[in-house]
Length: 301
Image 1: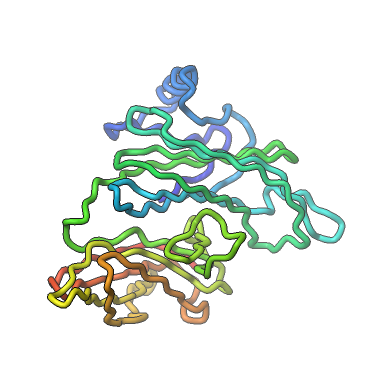
Image 2: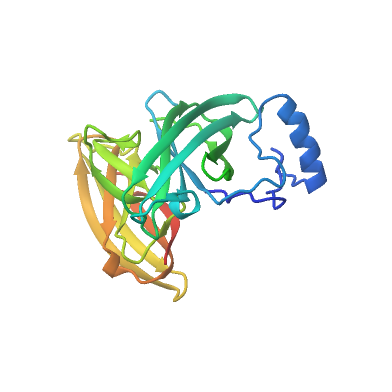
């Protein structure tokens, strides 16, 4: 789930909460009215913009709410000011905001970046991440980046549901997070930390051919057996959309003393060629024989 950038007049049509897509004139009229109320992020028409990838990663909390992580990414080539030694300076401001179904501003945050990088790789991305807690409901999330050096702006939006959940129901899974890296937590770790792991999301799910593909997800509501032990089976498989074939990456049985746990994995870059894939994670609670499946699409280029 991620939105594309907004450039000039190629605005994404505004979709009302009943699902009706409005025309551009209708959208503009609605935008003007909403901006007077101060509830919409929208760049002025005709303003120069660059593309941004945006995603969110919600995980269940015991109190019924969600830990929500939001990340946005943009190519450094679009915003870096070049230096003589082929390095670059990044100087920009990013903002993120979440509205509920009544267009009430439920959360906002921002970050200021002023950094000099010694060398700009061709595939380098500037990425920011935030964490918040949100109750179940429908949300519209928007992120905006303003580049001080070029005057360019990047905007991206998406919407989605956080469904009510309870610990009494059967097995369930969190979304699959595609990541550039899942590593042990350090003192300078960013906000995206789960179960002692720092997750560096690959926002947009697009990887370079030399990158290993990491992923992370959580398993909820396992049922313990009579001895108090949870037993579950996990199978990872990769579907190649071009060849229409399926490759099993791993299948293994696990045990846990906790009813909620997590899985983190890595696909070495030499195991996958360029193309578009669907990663499938099928988890089976062996105590009650219930299976749940999580899917995510990714691209290797």
